[in-house]
Amino acid sequence: MAVIYKVFDLPKQPFILPAFVLYALNSIAGIIYLFTPIIPGVKFMLNFKKEIFNDLICEIDNDEQNIEKLMPYSLTELNYSIDWLNIKIQRVKSRINDFFGEKTAVLSIIGLAYSAVQGFGGLDKLGDTISKGLFNSGTTNTLIVFGLAFLLGLSLGALALKNVANHLQYLKEVLELTKKIKEKDASAERE
Image 1 (cartoon, rainbow, N blue to C red):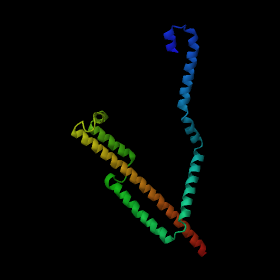
Image 2 (image 1 turned 60 degrees about the vertical axis):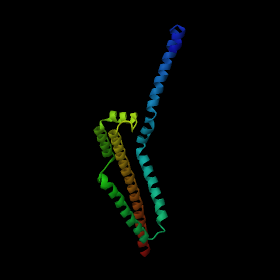
Image 3 (image 1 turned 60 degrees about the horizontal axis):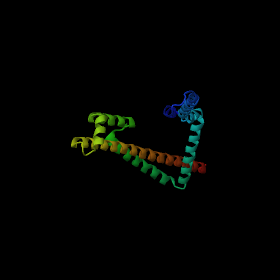
């Protein structure tokens, strides 16, 4: 509207009301746009207890389905599987602990990466090295960037191994639950 007004040298009065209406609509649309993502979050918070309860029920149902699949196996086979999973979990955890220590978290990895970037010269120098081209910025810079990439790869690998260890732990817990149910059923049959 402002362009039309300036180009054609039209009177100002007929454009004031439509301009204010468009301004108000634009402001309202912006506010709605900002509050739209908040609405599902507020709804989740208001129904938090119900949502958590539903998630728990789904998780229990999933575990019970997995237990049902394991019921045909004998207690000896279940014990063997539990022992095997214990060994596998220890191996995976020891791989992580050998390099990163026992209590490595995502925040410590971020801190390590930040200190490495600062030791390199900061984000500006790193960005400059990458923008010039990795192999055009000097051997030292190239080696430092490769070192940072290697550190990132090791950190992401450790996080992936922790995810594998958590999955193996879940499998072990399902096997232990199956074993408990089978032992309970066996003791009930003896009585």
